[in-house]
Amino acid sequence: MKKTILYLFIALPALLLQSCLKDQEDIFDQPSSLRLQEAVEKAHKALYDQHKLWVLDYYPEKEQGYGGFSMILQFDEETVTAWRLKETEEIVASSSNADLWLKATSEYKVKGEGGPLLSFDTYNDVIHYFSTPRGNSAWYQAMEGDFEFIIDSIGADRIKIHGKKTVNTMYLRELKDQDPVDYLLKADAMVGEFIYPTALTTHEGAELPIKFDLDNKQLVLYPNDLDKRTYLAFCFTADGLRLYKPLEINGALADDFLYDGDNLTLTSKAQANSVITLQVPVGYKRYKEWAGKYNFTFHAYTTAEELVSMPVTLEPAGDGTTYYMKGLNENYDLVLNYSRSTGSLELLTQRVGTLANNNFVLFTAWDSKNGYVNYTTTYGMRTEWSESKNTYVWVDNGKWSGRQVLSFTLNEMSAASTRVGICQDEDFFINGSNRVYKLNTLDKVE
Image 1 (cartoon, rainbow, N blue to C red):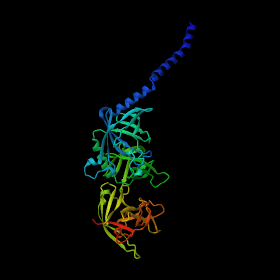
Image 2: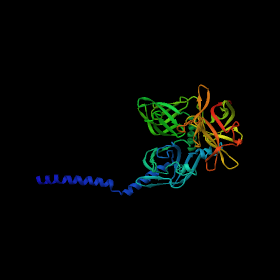
Image 3: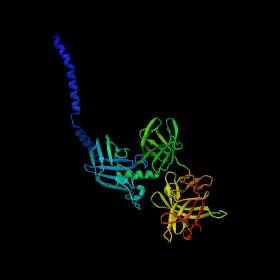
Image 4: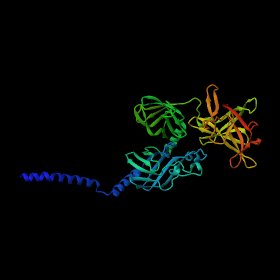
């Protein structure tokens, strides 16, 4: 009897070990290829099941430097239909809403590459815009966007993905009870409505100033502290904005905010006490508000430097980013660039016409105090509201390091873009001169 019991105790560990091994075999008895195929099929079905609409906050470029772009996707088993707002260069000059958005259908695949991979492998105007190089040499890498995405996790109304190239984390969020075009047009309206370059909130127990770079869709924390300055990309939504990464406000993380234009707040949809208070600077103007008649004042390039006032008309180009200033010369208009981040207009170095000898005339940024000119087309001046003068004054735009643009000259340039000399053709002069000296103000008259 004792021997029998002893044999049982000896055999028991072996039996238990055999049982554990059997459990492990049950878990891993499927080949890895079969497990991957099941994951691919599950991900594929999650995309097209019930013909859901998905909102994608799309972030091209690995540092999210362009901010986010709204895209709507709808899948069936083999094709995807996609919608997005047009970018400025794509907008057709028309009042039709159809000219504000694009819709395109193409094929896609979900395949296995270590995990489920969503690949938009046939061209789609909506999706591939961000990864397709354009004619301009500055865009030879396009916006470095993704068209292949690793599917990380699947929820009931949200699918987490990341770009295969950028590794940017993004989400497909189910769009419920809303038309895709309606969503995009509301998001576009939010872009126009949201004019606030600065804000305040509470972060880590202290008041935190915020700056919004609206041209690149970046929320900037600690904007005045170079060591602590942090950029958070965001995407405008139909009712506010959503951050690429959450921000801690009043002890809670928040990333999806509801905009309240009456109370000038952004409130977290998840935490009602997580609030960003928006600020509107004096003199800020929306794009359309700059249209009208003005007096453009500067000084004559003479010993007396008398003040000159010329009537001009600012006419919007209709693209949301540029204006034409008419009235300084009957043969050409000057182009002004609008900045949503500051609500200001910039007057920059620019080509204004061609001479009979095929050389061209360049309206050129001039540091008239120190005698330097520069042909870089980002250098120039911008408008700034002056409380003391109760009008807009012209100031250097801060792009020319170590120099200060105060004036402009008209230069003759060769076809190779080398300077020939000061333009002597009076057809290009402004107020009878080839110099626009010490810009002063831009005064609205009607």
